[in-house]
Image (spheres, helix red, strand yellow):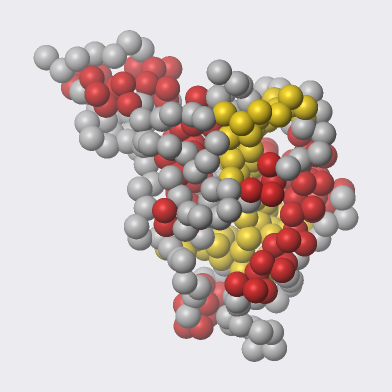
Amino acid sequence: MAKATVAFIGGSGLCDMEGLDGQADVDVQTPFGDPSDTITVGALAGTDVAFLPRHGRGHRISPTEVPSRANIYALKSLGVERIVSISAVGSLREDVAPLDMVVPDQLIDRTRSRVSTFFGDGIVAHVGFADPFCPDLSGLVASTAEGLGITTHSGGTCVVMEGPLFSTRAESELYRSWGASIIGMTALPEAKLAREAEICYATMAFATDYDCWHESEEAVSVELIMANLLKNVASSQDVIRELVPRIPPLRECVCASALENTIITSPDRIPEAAHDRLSLLVDKYLGAKTEVS
C-alpha cells in the first residue's frame, strides 16, 4: 500500500499540486466505511504526502455527512503522522479580514449530529483534548504563511457549527461575546479523531467573509464564499510547498502518545470485534487481541 507521513485535508483543488512526484490515487477501506474520496499520494520535496478532498471531488458531501472517522482512519493506515486541514471560515472579529489566514489554537464544539470518537461498543478511552491543535505543527504553519507575506493570525478560537445553514445574527453575536475569532463547519470531529489516532493536527483557516454580524459588510452568501475561496486556493498551495520541507522527521509533541494510559476498559473485557476494529490505534498499548471469557 502507498505510504505518506503528512496529509492535507481540504478542497479537491488541493490535489492538483505542482511538484507532486509519483502522483497516484489510492482507495482505502476502513472499518468505518469509505473515506470521502480516493486519496492522492505522492512525493513533495522528498516527503511522502497525501491529499484527501473532505467533501469529495465535486463537493458532493455536506459538512454533517463527511465520513470523518473513515477519513482519519484511512490516513492513519497510510502511516500519516501529521494532518494539516485547510478550510473556509467566517470571521467573528473586525481585525480578521476576508482572505486573512487564522491558525487557531482552541475550539468550541457546536455540532449536534456527528460521531466524534473511534471508541465505544465495548472499548472506552478518555483522551485529553485541552489543547486541540498540535502546537508544534500549528507554529510551523503560521510561520510559513507569515514568511510568504500572507496576513496570518496565530492563535484564536474556532467555533464549529453543524451547518449546512449559516448562523443567525443572534448566534453570530453570541459567539463574538464568547471571544471566538472564526466560525466554520469542518474542524470537528476531525481534530478529536486525529488526537485519538495520535496524529498531529493543525488548521489553515482562510476567512472568506464576516459571517452575518458585520453591519457594513454584505451578509454571508455562497457566492461570496466561493469567490474568496478560489482566491485562497493558490495561497494554501504556496504554504504547503514551503511547509513540507520544514517539517522535522521526528515528533516531540504529546500528540504521538495521546492514547497512553487513556484506555480504561480491562483488556480481558474488550470484545474481539472492538479490538479488531481499532487494532490500528490500540495494539500499541494493548498488544494482541484478547477474547472475552
